[in-house]
Length: 296
Image (tube, rainbow, N blue to C red; front, side):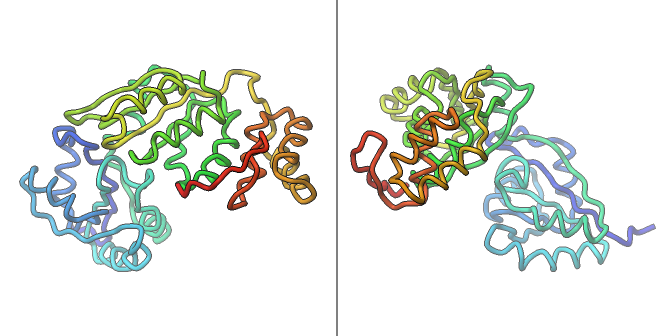
């Protein structure tokens, strides 16, 4: 009996080493009527390595809204659709959310074919607590927005996982050390599962020094794992801090507003200042000097 309704299969693919593809993933990719891929050129290389020629359609951040109705229609015709990203598990900082949500809402079966993920791979080898963790994806590219985001996370007790672009890793480590303190332990996992896989371990201060000294540090795919705040450290109500900063910033310069908000809430002054100056293009730093936007 032919299935009258297709199934959406969310398929994890290797994050670097093609040998990590599972037998089940290969079978699902071979049986699918079509594969929705973040980059068809990238996925075609994977299919060729597996000896497959399954048809491909692109599905990425810029066309997902337009592509979803077409794929839902194919599911309605009884065709099975496989969803893959360029590497790892789809939807984790990758496209696919709209397709999965739409397929589920329309009553189609959505199945997962689990496998590689840079998030869990980095956690597994970091040597930092893994009982509780949170994934924050990519931090904002612009410096002020990045610092404001980190200020909100300074008191987070769970282990934190980030992705970062090679050209921003030094600036991100600088901001992490500034907001979290240089003694916080962390790991930068570079090129996981690939030929040049490297793990850099140490405090944020030590990692920043390594980043300046090691030319290969800022090359390839990077995943950061940062230990959470110690119990009681920076135990600040983030909403309360933001509200205090917003109210004070209406009447005072950023530096003064940050100092008072920090005194009122017990938050680190750096965290308060990141919020106070986050919406401006330039302003005076906590020490009174002029701070310029670096454009990152």
